[in-house]
Image (tube, rainbow, N blue to C red; front, top):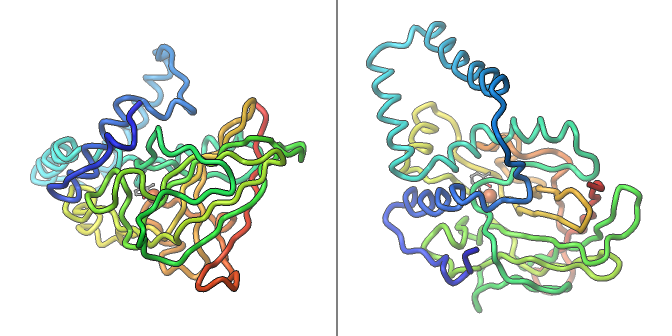
Length: 291
Ligand code: MBD
Ligand code: FE
């Protein structure tokens, strides 16, 4: 496990700064809460890999792909490796389909993709908690609060809410050079009634790095590189399937046009003023399925 202190970064390009660290994490298989492991069945390998390759061969036939385009594709793939952007590319353009398959057999609250920017080993906090942030952390103060229960409606005492999101400029700590390590990340333990309350700042919309191959491909096709502002959450409790989800904001200009296709209507917050300065609050309960 790496600690928040190991995760300070100093940048070359935005793409390489974010990509190299995300690659390191993906290679380590750190997201163990969802890994199965075990040997690959030969029939399964042939079926899945065969279908994927046939999808690409079909595109070549249908679009009459030229040698010039094939060579550009090769160079692009090499660039994805060189910049460490495999996690970014795969999570932006493919993970949402994998999540939809997983969701077919998941009960409880609606989930969505994990993405490439989750980090292990962040600050452990008790509810009510304030996420680690700079003294002058910019952005609208925001409270996110709610209760974690099982599908039977019973509160899950000591449930954990692992939360991470960008700062007001759209940067993730640990992957961009600007925010300090651990900024706006934490693992909050709910109280005996499964209630949690997290004080943070409202995040901003996020654009994938435009100087790397994933961003360049996106712009080359004329697609939007933006994700709506979002808060990532992993909600867990002993004996229950971990919920991977994100929360979005009503009125965000990028809702419905998320480059990662991860936004869902059920996941939209409409924070309301608390009367304490510019502070806003949203309440959101989570329901976990027994394992
Ligand atoms: C993100 O912030 C993100 O959440 C995903 C899924 C992909 C790219 C950037
Ligand atoms: Fe994100």
